[in-house]
Length: 146
Image 1 (cartoon, rainbow, N blue to C red):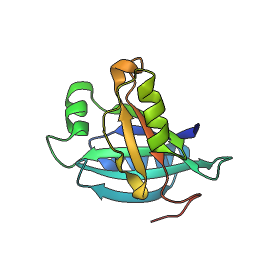
Image 2: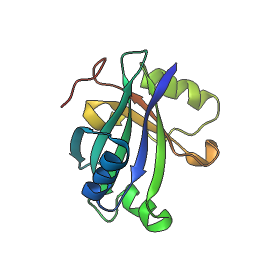
Image 3: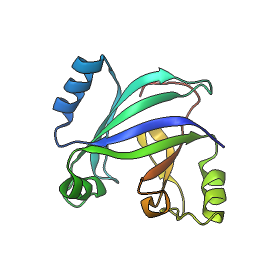
Image 4: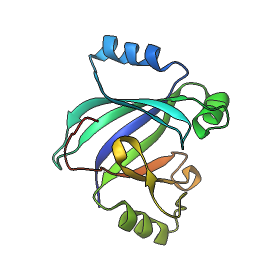
């Protein structure tokens, strides 16, 4: 069962400048940063708030580090902006199977490693009214900065 909006992914060309904007304009602070070589991005997670299920909601800022990464291709086509929405779930495997059974294409056969050691998969945007949708199971309950 999907329990919350885990994060909104925002593609950007300059991670530091984008972090600076969200910090100055809204007071959001960086909770976590990492480089995900598999997905070809550098990212910053800005924590917005805690949630009833013990997780949190974030803005995920994504800067491509490889020209052939999905985020780089998306930026070239669309420019900076909202890239995807992610829903939190305690069971990414079970929920992705249930959604697949309803005719929605799941992009990964098996969930992959995501931010902060989470497990993730994506749903095809053409099956989700034009929205790239991610399902996320956090590595640990609650917030644990890494």
